[in-house]
Length: 313
Ligand SMILES: [Zn+2]
Image (cartoon, rainbow, N blue to C red):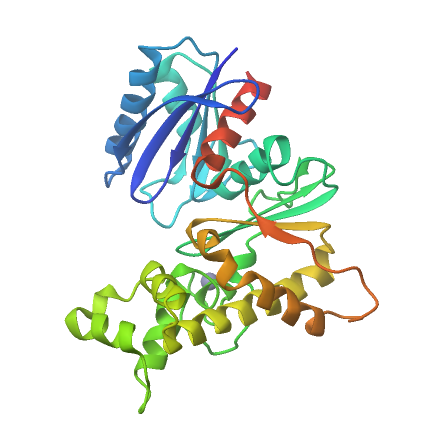
């Protein structure tokens, strides 16, 4: 029986009908409104649109936030309206279908393990590099969630004491140095230095300072812009530094990169691997890091949530 997965993000709500092979058969989308009731209306609207065209047995929601271990309550979601909200029960009552919740990175990790780059991997890690870092750890095919359902929040490991402030309330978090947002911040810092040579980014910043996004920096790096290239190299270094700490705790067999920044992986992946090998504990006496890009890109969260719904319905 088919299920529906819904990716509930900070800007859009995207639903898809998914079969038992992880194939997305049909999709519907809406924008993410502010306020709990409007958000739940938006989710029910995209799911109802698909229910008009397909018969499904259950619905899974991939949410950018902390989910309680019973996967029925959203504890906290920084970019969404829910706070300790019994979302699964409320949506289930409205749709008349079983509903299960999962952290969006966990859902993406599950999709990669069942149908993508982490298939058959014993200890696998997914890092989604976008606005921040989303992380999922799978051990023998099971998601590791910690005692209270909030692990692993690797993006908020402090790499730089007293460093860039983070929305989580701390400073110097890994994701402030290793994400699309971080790439833009690093390039902006470099542009502010005297004597900087940057034909592409300087021109864009002069026209509109807001134009310096992670995507713009990646595009400029592809054209050989020196500042963009230096920002990309810094990102590779921070990726390697963070992964070397992660290796001390989890010793993963394979790390898979997803999120928007993974589209630019050819610009930083080899350098990150090289630098990692000089940083890890026991360097030179451990197997090389296996680091590659995700298989499902944008659809991973939706597919993972639908897969989870199939096993819980
Ligand atoms: Zn943080």
